[in-house]
Length: 251
Image (cartoon, rainbow, N blue to C red; front, top):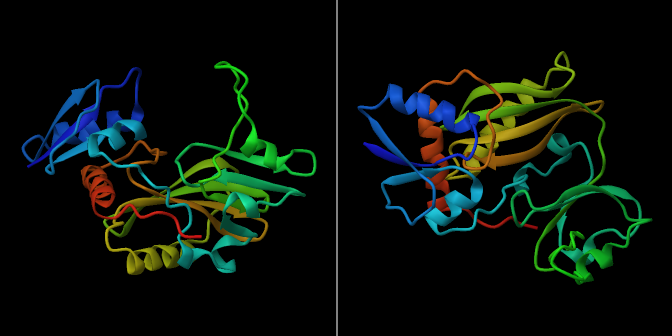
């Protein structure tokens, strides 16, 4: 029997609602409890909640996956894309810039011709209420050319198999390239030992379907309302990945 430690939500949390629904249906196989404050959990316990909650329960920092190195080809990217240190961020032009050393830290379209990139790393806040964005020189960053996105989908992979492909933005009649998605899943499954349940965000563009990013199942949202008991095992896989791998992003 697996025991889940769920973060007690401050407001309605759709992901926890779906998970609890499946846990209640499988109460003879799994158990769970809800807590407000995170604490270190045992090896047979599986925390589920917001990213900081899971990190504190496991005693780890969750490293973003973004796009693994073996998927950074023109076939899957269909745009200029690279992971770099702060010195190699362009100082001219328009591009998408994202901190890829910490989940949900910073991501924005930048016009470096009119924005001083160096100031974003060297700025010192003038007081505690100063909300100026300050970036960390020790972090890695994604620099990507802008793409014309027609529609976006989230691909859910549970135990190495595609479970769902859910539309979440744009023109829903612009459908993704299923063969490309299957090829990406096969490559991830071949290269990764512990990443068994994850999501792949894809975009349909005027150049075809491209991969936007990959998430371990501890750091993604559910864009569907129909789930079976496999959802429970996807969360288990996600925690097992953080415990067993969770390697830093490669440049």
